Length: 234
Image (cartoon, rainbow, N blue to C red; front, top):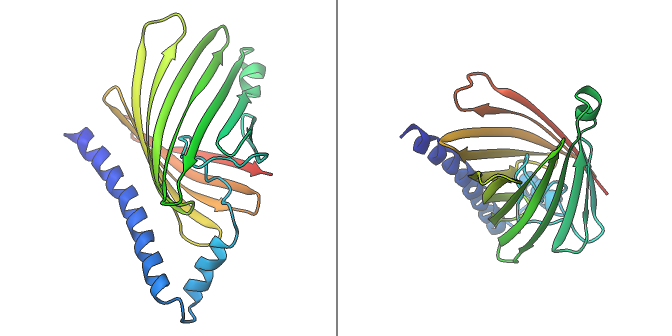
């Protein structure tokens, strides 16, 4: 019952974020002919064009894709590029793991996805992991409802270790909402092996970069784990 309550609470938070944003858009649409500072601010958000960071939350993906030729550099470090408007690849490697532990750790991701004008999208792909002499892969799929500035996404994935029959299924619910021209709020939750992990963050939007500041709470661990993520888009 506790698990169901946690998952239900996350769904309610994400749904409330999306519904609140939709209600705000409706009110602003009715007031289109009036001068309003809030309306101007919202219009200025939308006039910025594609939102940096739209293709993923803190870790989980959305159905939004990098456009063809659009690139992203992230921590670890990582590098992602939109091969087409519907297909992107990303590679990352941990320098810290190599220097401190003298072991290799890398991740490769291939993702396909499409968002319809109605605000509904689907996506899927696979991640490959290299952990020293071990390898693993993670096929995933999901759907997104909303727009670039307010959205909710559900993902399902299966973690597989090469050479082992062990498979770990887990699900994820994520949501985000833009609160002004430079900030948005993100909520993300995972469920696997009867355990729940919930993360939340404030995302700062620059013209070509995003910075996430937040924390994660894992079931059975009483203290929040701080999160910091940076992405540069060009």
